[in-house]
Image (tube, rainbow, N blue to C red; front, top):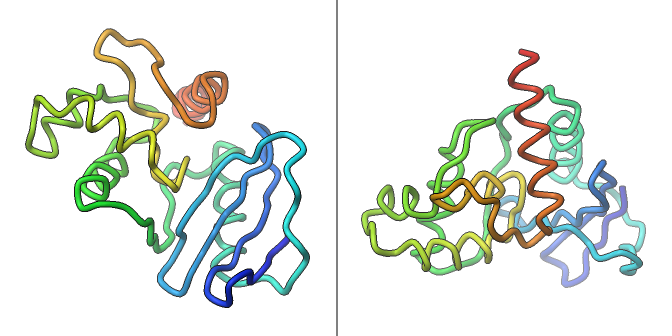
Length: 166
């Protein structure tokens, strides 16, 4: 785990997962971001670890081991009120299940906002913890995922296998 206090307020660490390296960002309020890093991206400089980043790393490892179905971390993603409403709804999708963009739009109070939900989903700064990978097309297609379609498929397969095992 590597951390860096780049601006004095935001800490981050890089964490290896079975699907590649993720960068976890945190501020004084909570986890601010979790994104897959591009192949060959420059790793963070080594700094002392923060308890919040260590907890996030541990919970991610438990998730990928099929031992964790929910994350218990304070979150502080940056976004519009609508985006935050969508992200809050994504967290309500049960582990191992999916919802369509249209279902999320209805849940946030506007059935016709499926495209806007798709954009908010795509802009989710806290992948996996805010499970945007659980949102699919209404026809069941694995549409869009900022981490790439193969990762989305792998995350859904991981959850299905762990749910079946438990």
